[in-house]
Image (cartoon, rainbow, N blue to C red):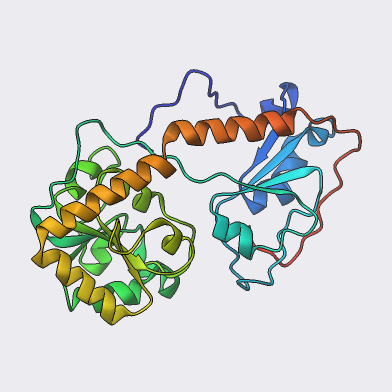
Length: 289
């Protein structure tokens, strides 16, 4: 949302897919892989080179969940190294392609508002995993605003369009990510690219992205997080320095050209393979996609 489609991206009705030629097939959800391919693709199309893009870490069990894709002919792409580490991918080869983000030219961190900003959709309905309780607790200690779909349910500011969000968030002193367990959020990457210092829980990929005292603060202690937030509220010079560190890190790691080049390599690798056997119908297993 918020981005125009490039001229080389085409949407077609599902019923027309069987008549079109493709070089490879990309799956992005459990339903895509277990159901849609057998309803939409022809048998010949199901023999094409295939990529499964897994957006999340395992849900059922953090270390012992087997991924639904069990096929050495499919490449399983994860969006963080943490996700790749935690999933049991069995015999399926994996790659990691980290996020790539863009932010508007000329929109940069100012931080004049002595408040922190949280950007999570539907936080009240997504519970402990997304950190609803963490947000509620922290809000009693430091001034925090929440934006996102249905954020009004927690006294938030409501949904802000993707195009308008950067100009809103750069005025806040810091960006707070209350999430316990999910993939690295694009909102974190975008905040860093804008030059915002990031505060969050030292879980999943966050400790590998946010460096304490350089680009923000990550802790497993809620009390220490409160202290770090108060430090940033009291010291705008510190906040600005950490924001510059965050922007530098984001430009190195989440540059959109790096992202596009990495995906180009994956697609070329996969599409260049010669598939000789028909794709077997995947068995429904206990993993989550």
